[in-house]
Each structure stands twice: as structure tokens, then as C-alpha cells.
Length: 137
Image (cartoon, rainbow, N blue to C red):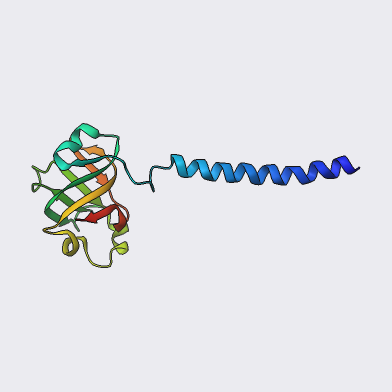
């Protein structure tokens, strides 16, 4: 009887230990919240598609497109559309996270954008869901 009771006490401890290990591993492998170790210019971003990076450059244009589905805000670095080497994209669903509009906050600034670089119509971009992904220099 005592050995059965000991088994039942070990099971919750083992489960708790596995949960803690899983949480620790998820923090290690979760790239969403970690700071990237790679910092590159907007012009270099095209060579790093699929990489997690911090892309830096001068804001050339901030455009909130209310007439497009999802109401995106495009922050184009180094040149205006369609010649920009890099775009930070904020979907309308996430705009409530900014205390002032991205147009007011970032226009004319030099910024760094953190996240995973993807390609959209041959232009590198990072989808930004939180203001802490954009650092004003």
C-alpha cells in the first residue's frame, strides 16, 4: 500500500518538473520575444529573408491605408514606396497598442525594427504587432 502511495506522489512531481522544463525550453526557442543578435541596415535586409534581425534606417514614409482590407500602416525606410528597401507593417488590429499614431511617432525618425524578416512582393518586411518592436534612435 505504501509503495502505491509513493507512486502517486511522484507522478505530480514529475509532471510539474516536465512543465517547468517545457516552459524553460519554450523561452529558449521562442524567437518572438527574444532580442535579435543581428543588426542590419534596411538595404541589407533583402539578404536576410527568414532571419530574425533588427533592421535600421531612416523613416522615409509612414502611410496608413484605411481603404485596404486590414487597414495596414506601412513604415518605409530609406525611400518611399515603391522604391523602399524595407517596410515595417502594422496591421490595423494592432494600432490600439500605440498611444500616439505611428505617423506621428515615427515620421522623420531613424528607427530599428525587430522581428523576423519576410518578403512581400520582393520587398523585405517585418510585421510589427507591438510598439516595443520599434526602437527610435
